Image (cartoon, rainbow, N blue to C red):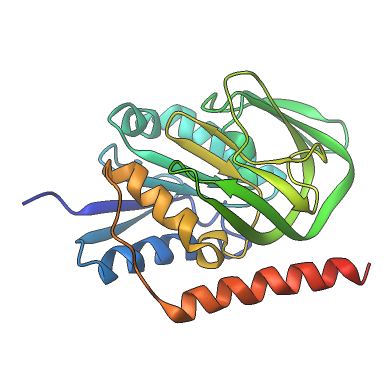
Length: 243
């Protein structure tokens, strides 16, 4: 019997101001619906991050919280060990930024060293990106999916050659107003939208799980989930036409 899938929610008290913990609930539920045993481990500052995780999750937070989180993770080291062992990291907004090589905080744009898991750098943008976002993501099987969420970030992120965009932007700002959103490198996925983003986008949630499990998951028809996705896509498009 295979070991249960371990979902690790990292530093919710620091990186969880926009309800991103919901991403953990979504992954757990989609595993349970398929009859796959899973557990949730919640880690707070001062706790050791378990190196045994299958999927690690980081969420959004303010400047001071970002600095506290990145320094604690650097000192702990177990997130790196978990990824080396084959885990997946899914990081949202501030969590995405701290995965890069550097990011800035405050009015003086102090440069902070990131975790170095994504070849990206984040600097303060010309204006804050706030609002609904609609992107187009191409899954590994070649199928295209529309993704929705709510972005709220002052940092603009530029990708280096080793990171690839997660998606292309149809409505919204994304990484830096350059038509890209998020970044993917090895088994690390970074993205800006909240929502929670995996609740709005079941295809992306299943991709995270498939990547972590090393196999494709069987289809999971859930009409209510599909209807939520359709409604959010329609809402973002209608809202954009009113601007």
